Image 1 (cartoon, helix red, strand yellow):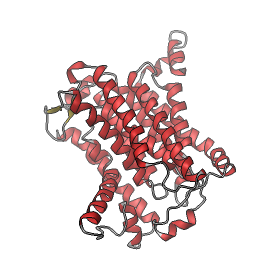
Image 2 (cartoon, rainbow, N blue to C red; image 1 turned 60 degrees about the vertical axis):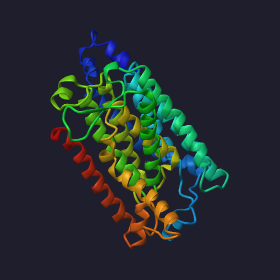
Image 3 (cartoon, rainbow, N blue to C red; image 1 turned 90 degrees about the vertical axis):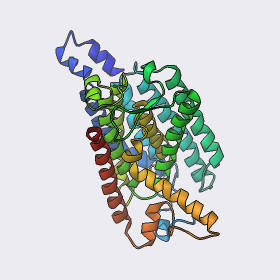
Amino acid sequence: MLYHWLFGLRHVFSPFNVFRYITFRAALCGGLSLLLCLLLGPMVIRWVKRMALGQRIREEVPQRHRAKEGTPTMGGLLMLGSIIISLLLFGDLSNQYVLISLISVVWLGLLGFADDYVKVRLGRPRGLNKRTKLIVQFALALGIGTIIYLFPADPAIRTHTNLLFIKNVHIDFRTPFLYVPFVALVIVGFSNAVNLTDGLDGLACGLLGVAAGAYAVLSYVGGNFQLAKYLDLIFVPKTGELAVVALTLTGAAIGFLWFNSHPASIFMGDTGSLALGGLLGVLAVLTKQEILLLLVGGMFVVEAVSVLLQILVFRLGKGRRLFRMAPLHHHFELKGWTEEKVVVRFWILGILFGVMALATLKVR
């Protein structure tokens, strides 16, 4: 809103012309969301404590986590609020992809809030029924897939996606009956992958910042005709504006990390993890970089796969376990690693995955 007003005054005050540049507004939104988290964080923590919204710890997690019982949760409200305010002020609200991003954040944020509320207020540590959560997630994701198919920025690439490593070769799903479910699986899959990863102080938050930073680059490149052509990417008109969304997410993640680093003063909760994981999936879908998300969000993939493998081995092996505990970060905790060591090492791996993902742009 403020962006449109200020840019409209560029003929009166020429320096306002700077708002035309995506890179400027991306940096502005990233810095603003970071600043909002830092400034509003103490107030949000006090409010959560006053409302007695403390984390409930499940019985099966490592014993050392018992000390975290009662730590304020629903900190995702701080992150989501910072992102929404920043985008409303300096994002291009006439861009359909920015609106889709905002809708997904609000939709999944409300779902996560309901899940956290059930855990805290109703004393059910597992939250909402899994089926209920999946229905709400798929309703949004299928809706987004349908909108992208019916109203594409470029009909010629309606059902296309970029393929890793191979130049000038794209995957074309051709039919909406394949493409829309694919979109839904990406969004729902990463919404839940981030949720599974959010088990240690600062872990999911730091990895989100890295992944969002990578998608800021991918969005800008894929939305720039010359750069996309040079790097043999699918050029998706109007997606350059998603660099603003991605960097806003990065800023919010870094700002929230100030309070979420060990020992955490507040937890993200499902309010943040479901919404921001879903937003990461939305960014991948809109930029036609769904497959690359496997690298960009590599540690989220590893964490989710560890849970699936644990369940599979447990059922087929009649009670045997592949890991001491899943998700994978708990396995290393039980092996004797400190929480800080697990988090920092996973961050390092997350950064390596992000660098590898960006390197594929040139490898192709």
